[in-house]
Amino acid sequence: MAIPQLTAPRARLSRLDTLGSPYLYILPFFLLFGAFGLFPLIYTGYVSFNDWNLLDAGEHQWVGLANYRELLHDPYFWNALGNTLSIWVLSTVPQLLAALWIAHLLNHRLRARTSLRMGVLLPNITSIVAVTIVFTQMFGRDFGMINWLLGLAGAGPVDWQANTWSSHLAISVIVAWRWTGYNALIYLASMQAIPHDLYEAAELDGASTGQQFWRITVPQLRPTIIFTAVISTIGGLQIMAEPLLFAGSSTPTGGSDRQFQTAALFMYEQGFREFRFGYASAIAWTLCLVIAVFAIANFLLTRRIANDEE
Image 1 (cartoon, rainbow, N blue to C red):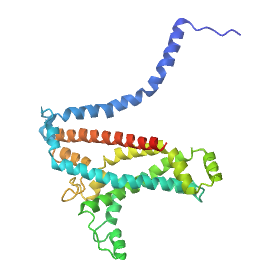
Image 2: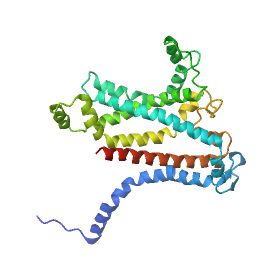
Image 3: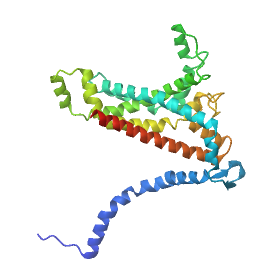
């Protein structure tokens, strides 16, 4: 039976459909990204070059780099950036190590393994407001459970909100508790893709469970570890809700002495409390640059470590 030949117009339409359909399928994403991602980013950059007060009914004046120069000499900004980095380190490093250990345990045959895997994700899907309020009560100065446990151990109570180190530690615990299970499931999915033949060969060679973990599992998880490290860096440097709710009020100063005010909280304070929209936009773009630098540095560092080990 002869195959019918397409006419020239129909052939052109067929080629156009083959070439253009993939772009039409992904067009909605780019339209939404342009409207709700790219445009606000560019517009925020424009606003950062203006003296823009939200109370002046949209009145603004072009000031160039004045907002950025003021920001570089603002001690409150550097304090907020230092607090952000401190909380990021205290929460990210233990979080990823704990996630790796939990994923390793869940990768073995356990009773109710499916329920346990679902359970580690519960902190991530729980409302961040509810989680922070509960932990704030636990870290309460007078009637908190943490101070009660410290009292049983013979230690004195700690005013977790009053000191820099204690407030950073408490907020880091909240962040780590919420995201450890999420990262653990990512590691678990990658662990299940590792060929089981590698473990069988290592077991025949007399390798212990710990040796198999460090010599097989961790090297095979390097791309996933790099991914979670970069994502955790981006999220950790944008932290805002936890310190805001940890203060127990809607005041974005992060404590009486700004001891746990983060960069995102400082941006919120300048934009929606001082109504300095231009200055807050400059903070947003500076924070974006800091996040990009740390994410790239984190990626290059972990990749170099992986290459050196190979």
